[in-house]
Length: 111
Image (cartoon, rainbow, N blue to C red; front, side):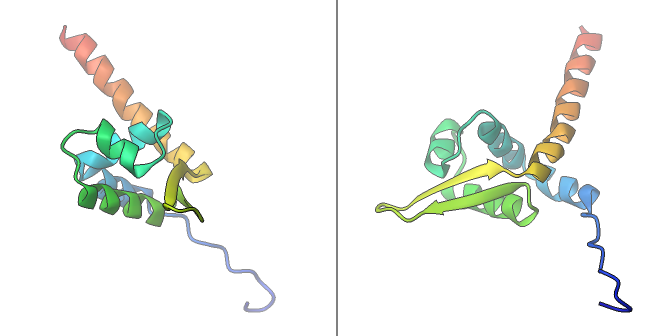
């Protein structure tokens, strides 16, 4: 602290996040699964044919890094991990909703 002032955290670089996340087709698919209630990595992998464990783990790690998802590991045998949208993640997914809405509008206009 300088002169008794609290340091205000910088706002996240949302544009950079969008670029980094949307740059991989699997990020949106993983977010869609989580929004539909699929929270365990194994279930996501089964629900998304063609998604490898390596890519899924990379996507989940990146989404957690950006604060979009929260990871919860349970102390069980075998280990169990679940992912949930954070409050920021719920706000962030509004961007995805906007993209999907635009796509529907463009498809309707093209018909």
